Image (cartoon, rainbow, N blue to C red; front, side):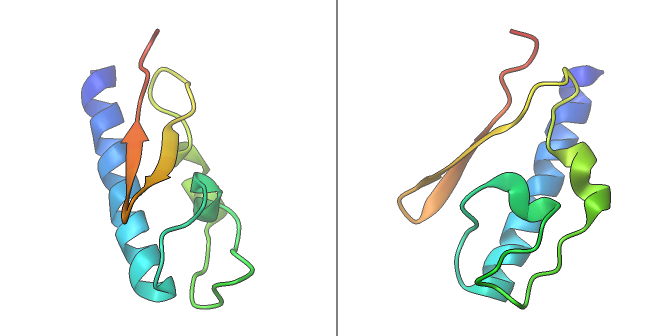
Length: 79
């Protein structure tokens, strides 16, 4: 289902966020780190193949924002 697949994508993004934080010592400012290198973190290598992770299964951009020492990742689904 689209909801299950969206949750799977969110899990992949969360894994990439954890990897980025381990490599760079901080969280990225946006999900753009998935497909573009980040100038102030030479340890991270992006991958254009991650482009499919930028949108949920409803073709809506994921919402990502920094919050305190963590982040908030959301899918707004079909609405």
